[in-house]
Image 1 (tube, one colour):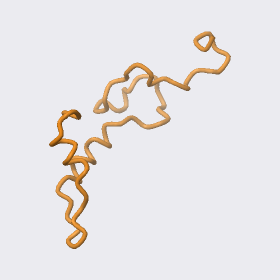
Image 2 (spheres, rainbow, N blue to C red):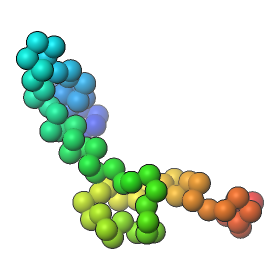
Image 3 (spheres, helix red, strand yellow):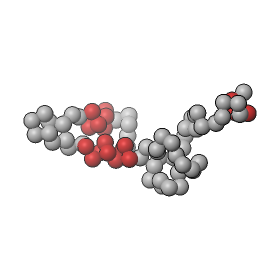
Image 4 (cartoon, one colour):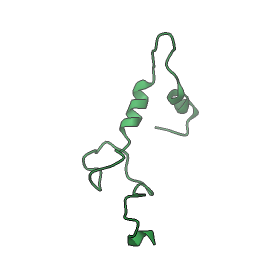
Length: 72
């Protein structure tokens, strides 16, 4: 998925036809949505969801106690 491609972004931004309600890119948007992790994961590693995008820098923001050593 090339999020820097103007064509790709145009597909994501396409609105359903107001008359027929057909949406040729609904499945593409659903696939992208399904790749996000739940906002409150139940484990530290995405073992339960092997299909999701990998953890990246900053993903653990807010998951540590406010008085922990990582917050000094």
